[in-house]
Length: 169
Image 1: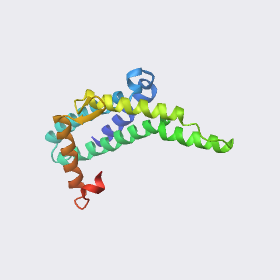
Image 2: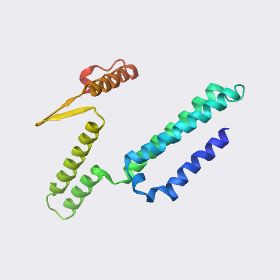
Image 3: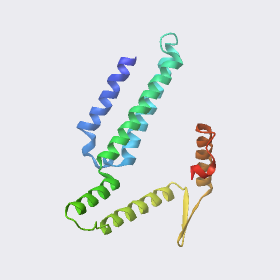
Image 4: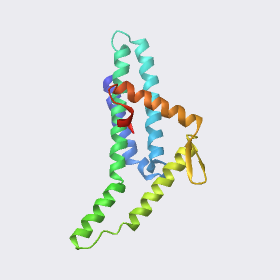
């Protein structure tokens, strides 16, 4: 089963690298997330069925293993994809390096536009998920947003019980 899982992960990567990365939906963070989420769900179901039928050879520890490896693979994939996009931080570094090479001041106007666009997109995404609401020039958490924030706060406290609230902000 573990060999089959390793082959599956390799095939999952190759399908994206050779075919899907050309398609517009798979060029977005959301598309890639859902590609990996669907894979993790199918892997979890297949692993659960195998764990229930082959308890002595695979069982619950095997299920935890394949889900953990899939999680590491998916998070690594998303992180590398994000880094490969160049990103805002790399644009800042490139702008500063170019200005130093020509002994001029960096032109941050284009970067400000990129930053404003990124901020608008993030806020629109949070609003679309129903986590925030906008009114005039303010943004507030919705009931759902407050619940998610509380859940994340509890998770942070569980992970690092010694961290106080001022460090988390």
